[in-house]
Amino acid sequence: MRSSLRILPGAAALLGGLAWVVHALLLAVRPLGCVGGACFAGVLRHRESEDIAWLLLVAVLLLAAAAGVAARSGRARRRWTASLLLLLAGAALLVVGLFVNRGASDGSPLWWLHDSDTLGRLLPVAGAFAAGLALWGEASRRLALLFLGAAAVGLFVNVQDHRVLLDLPIGLAWVVLGVRTALSPPQPGKATPASVRQA
Image (cartoon, rainbow, N blue to C red; front, top):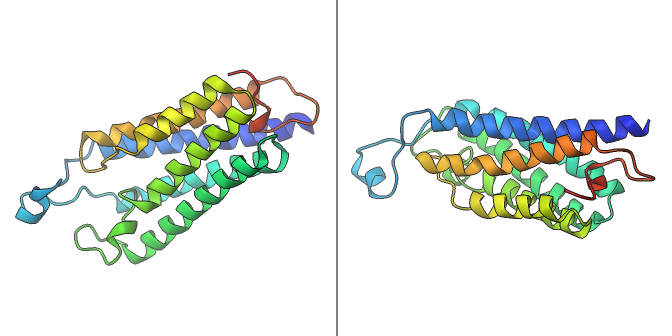
C-alpha cells in the first residue's frame, strides 16, 4: 500500500511534467507568431495553439493530482495546498479558454485565456513556485531551487516565438520530482512527493 501511494503521485508528477514539455516543444516547432508591433501591422498572425491546449490542461491536472497528495501527507501542507489551488485555478481557466476561444487565434473573445499565453499558463507557473517553497520546507533544497528557478524563468515565456522553450524547465522539474518520488525508499508516514528529503 505504501509503495502504491508513493508511486502514484510520482507517476502523476512524471507524466504531467512530460506532457508540459511536449506541449512546449509542439509549440516551438510551429511557425512564429506575431510579437509587439507586428501584431498591429498585420505582418504575422498569432501562433496557433488552441488545438493542443488540451495537452497543457492534462499536464496541469496531473500535476494538481501530485500536489494534492502531497498536501494531504507532506510536511509543508499549506504550501502544497497553495500549489494545488493555483494548479486547479489554472486548469479552470484553461477549460474556459478552450470552450470560449475554440478555434480562434486572433481576436478571440477572451484573449487573456488564450491557451498558454497568459493566466491559463501563469497560474500553474505560480503553482510550481509554491511547490518549490514546499520542497524547501521539507529540506529538499536542491530540488526546491530547481522548481524556484524554473518558475522564475517561466515568467519570461512568450509562446509566439523561441521564448516558448523557456517553459521547458518547469516540466523537467516536475519530471525530476516524479522520478525521485517514485524511486525514493519508503519512509514512515511519508509516501508522497513530500517524502523527497534529499534532492
